[in-house]
View: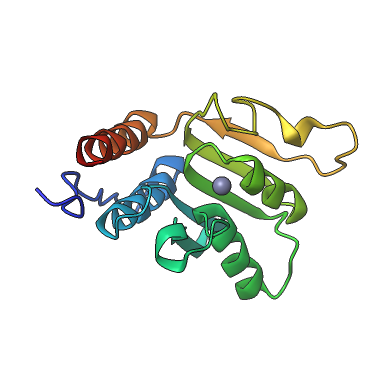
Length: 168
Ligand code: ZN
């Protein structure tokens, strides 16, 4: 099996119930696309008033850009779509807890809510390893939730790295 042959399948959620699982499924599907491009399988979507205004996955390898994480790309897309850098009315769904850089981007763009799948106790900065959003000097308050489709998001990441280790 080639690394690009992702053994996981996309989730096709019902359009009728647009809840957190619905949007996380779309982020998960982005993560699968990342895998198929040999990128770390992390995906993100941004919802605004019931509409998906951004979706992205990691692209650091293809672009040789260490800042090309799913969250950063999605935040840029969303700000462009809205014509406003303030994303207070938006919810960011991401399959893994944001790293220090992406947590910083969440604060700087004033994303109203972040919902992530898997917590990251090593690098996660929205509660997992550290809570950058709770720094005293940060006056933007972001609502953070986790655990949506956590098992699915975790299995994807774990399998990807296991396969990579076998190959390297
Ligand atoms: Zn990141």
